[in-house]
Length: 358
Image (cartoon, rainbow, N blue to C red; front, side, top):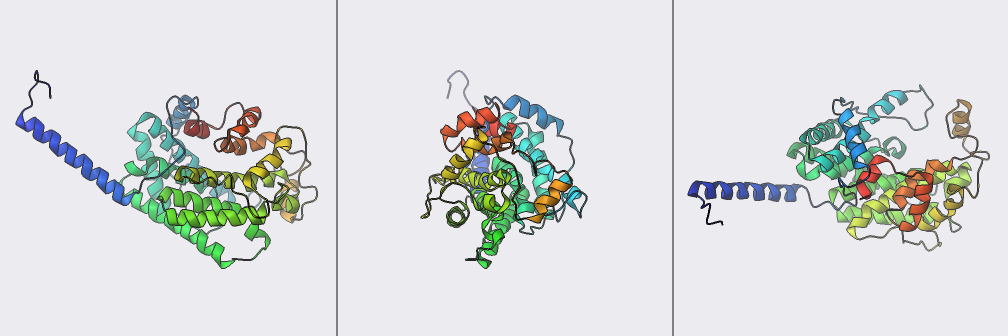
């Protein structure tokens, strides 16, 4: 303590009380929210930070549109609740963006936006365990992991209960069809199930659930990724669109597991298949050395239905730039994918840049 400014007893007591309060708060947080290991570490030095903050400011006044149910899988435009679901899901990237903006700026308005959004969605939405309907929940999970320690206790506990319901629910669903090799049990649907289980486990810092997720990941590598590097969905759909849609969730799962000391990218199944091998298989198409006409020999009628109503990407030549998110994420696991990522897009999506690029 400086001799020039001796402390009074009252000042000393105030500091002590503040320390007790701070430590009690930290202890409470530690009990209710175990330390989350997250590869995403936002930094103001990121090239994407300024742009992300500007975009987040523009969404500060956005409302919350939580719904109890969503459904887009297997639907064409204006069928069922497709448009209503798509509109409601727009909340999720806004909440992730706000969470990143709070980490970059410490502006409490962004934290309040995330807190209110998570409270509304985790108390309103009822999982249907359709992984195509729910795959974009990764954005809501990201918003939680970035803000968990600072959320109100009520929102934090509601979010954790929701994540546990989500992760355990998908594990139970997978166990019900254990051993079945029907299409939806090994195709891209399963890749998205594995992603959601893994992200929930990582967000909860639940190592038991994370170990279950790795077992599911290993089985999906064996079932879906082939020894030559191609994937089951490519044989079924004749489309690189579905190669990306299969690999991207598996890469996201590997990213979520990496801070816990796991190297899922390096896992090789007894068949010789691996996530890295499949990323390498796609590279000649992504870098333009090879081209592919999409869905020509698909075995799925819905693919033709989407082409007939003019949905982009379901006919014609595959667009390599559609894999830029996949390779920017893969580059965070293995730097040898970085040159291809930059070729596909000089800069990644803002959230990726804010998370990973310093």
